[in-house]
Image (cartoon, rainbow, N blue to C red; front, side, top):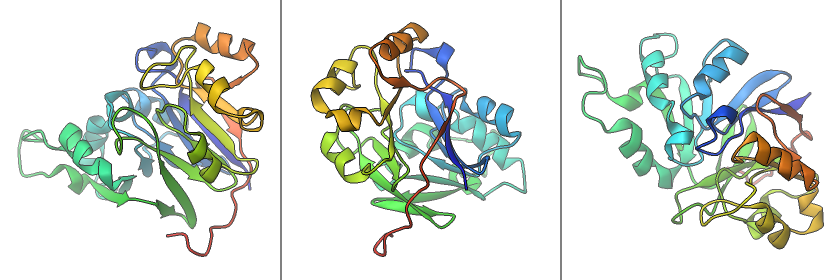
Length: 252
């Protein structure tokens, strides 16, 4: 069985030419889970797979990561075969923020009579969630205030930080062994995002060797990160992953 991360977009919020940061976990070439749904993500997803995602994980509720949710609602609501079937996974602490940002506007349809979440299967989680027999760990990131951003990991295979400052202790727990670590990193850090100097200060050489950087500010920034010896994800690129480990007995 083959596993890949397919980067639909790799850019920071202002790097529109790189696409909104979003990734698809593929199993044997088929999409299993979309992570984040920015303004251009659905178009990129449909251009690749010819359909809508069946499962989405939301890392946090900034619009460059959820800006496609309104369009997704419209497409799903008017498709009887899909209505109520697409699973939206997110940490329970994000539910009020997600509700406020995408679901609470009065009159989700002009005709009325429709509740936003009836179009989907919202699956709140805390430690993680099950999907197709796999246990995905959910872990806190450092992005603005606490409990507003959460990364995702599949044991033995990958960790995806979402937007974050450095989190060495967390990655030590959730991204052991040979797991790939897809990490938010720009050429310059700030109070909400990791910069390459942060990477070199906070992470040891063994972890740095497993990093794949994304959410950078421009194509030129990506080239500069590669010139410093780091792997950098490109928009549209598929990255091979180690096979995930069997779920632990106490998962879930």
